[in-house]
Image 1 (cartoon, helix red, strand yellow):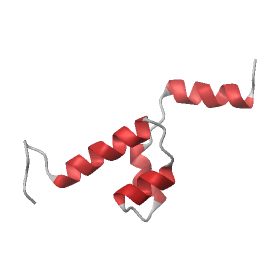
Image 2 (cartoon, helix red, strand yellow):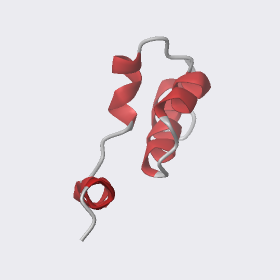
Image 3 (cartoon, one colour):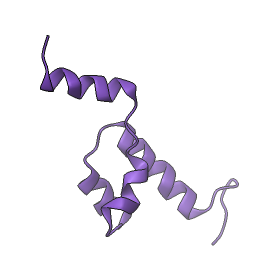
Image 4 (spheres, rainbow, N blue to C red):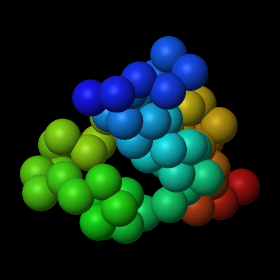
Length: 63
């Protein structure tokens, strides 16, 4: 693999998928974009933070 600016294509793919996960793109679409077949492999790109967990908690138990 040829490196570009110190990054190889796999690192660029990982970065792009991480940005998609941060923008709340559904896992199925991230899998399609990255061509991952196993959801467990693609889940590394969708690490929800505390704010995201609080948001869905509010959906399940509104004030």
